[in-house]
Image (cartoon, rainbow, N blue to C red; front, side):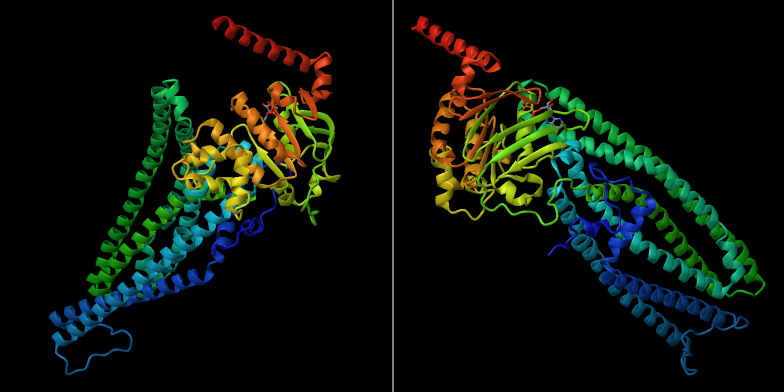
Length: 635
Ligand code: ADP
């Protein structure tokens, strides 16, 4: 079971975004880190185990170092008895009867045993760490982000390109996982080991330790300069990656247009340009990293030089045993290695914070359209719709619908006609609350749509758009998309109503035929009929057909509408249509212009009154006559 991140969980104390804004406020680095730490806290059990394992590994390492030092000093003492014998650790004292070889064999065996135990513990550590990051943290983050995306409003998707959202769910959640492993766990381990090494070295020789580590402040200064300088580069890099994915996905989904207009070369150049941008951006980061890493290395070499000079001097005065000098070299190298890790971590921190911020932006985006407290159920809608002085604009200052008012009775069929951009689709999208109006009210069965349970409301409405998305699944599953428990009988009935049954039966596997990506293997008309069947299967009280039959020829449209007559009985239907044959069937026709209804009435009445409807009707009749005449002349 994925961890339920549901909104508030992943917010971890962040303030809600302002109402009306799709994005939350920009988080500072500090806030991002605090929230990431809180996420890591959810997995504190495994994190603690990892830290304990690292603590044990460190202790074992130091024990091995101590044994090395003892071994060297033992040999040194045997060669030159004037030199002090070693200090035996852990209250261990070899028996006086043991020969030198026996002592060395015991030391060697102990080191082999320590090495074996460290190997096993290291293996366990790596397994646990991978399990935590890959199987727990990233799985939960991806589920949480995807869950939030599913609940966000249309306005959010209007404002955000799909390429960027895909990157956020995939690459950026990975960056967050890396942050938890690299920064939260490894930084603690790093400081823990630095502390261990430091304590151990100090216990051997205080001034030598301080002298050897005198370059640390400079190293800290370099790291923070580096962090600042790469921060913007990483942000830019993430943006460019989004653009690249968007360019790629657009040219792939629009491949027929690209090929149809012979634009392959131009598209190739477009992709090449963005690809070059990504490459150059990476190069700038790479240059900075390449400069930083050797600088850190150089500083660690200075440490060794100080050790050899000062440590050698102490040894020549007999104040420092050879074994411990060798141990110091080893520890300083470890120290340098950890400091090198520190630079890697600083480097990844910037990258990961940007990724994390982008994921938090999704998690914090406000869900403007959601259930109010105690929403009213709408299990069996009757289907009356009323708009009262509705004003709406995608941008607040630019209304698309202005003061729009109308009433539709249950079971009525309303056709909507009007020029492109008049606001027909926008008006329809307010009924299932894809967007909320800024002023006025939309009521369903006399109840404000905003007070109704959103799921009930949307399940009461069947929608068919001009372009409908079909999933890469079987035809049956596509029809039953809104009602997965539907029986085969229900699916077929819906398909028959949409005049889809016959063509489906002619497909190789009938209802079990799997559609290609986006249903591309079907013709436009066939896809449209499947979409109509999908809407009808819901048996909705309200049916919205937004130019749904525009891509279908007039004859098929007539057949579909005739077949749907039965299905439409008892349902409130709104059809955006342009053909007289469709408009004629409606109980009432609304003519929309500039976001208002400028004419309303029955087909016959509108035909006889001056206005947009009459002009459109005349144009269509003239067209039909011309077509008929030319056909006559030809014959
Ligand atoms: P119609 O369906 O009558 O052709 P629409 O309702 O689609 O008209 O569009 C009405 C106006 O709203 C147009 O100017 C259109 O550009 C704008 N519009 C439509 N959808 C969006 C959107 N998602 N974001 C911003 N503006 C939009």
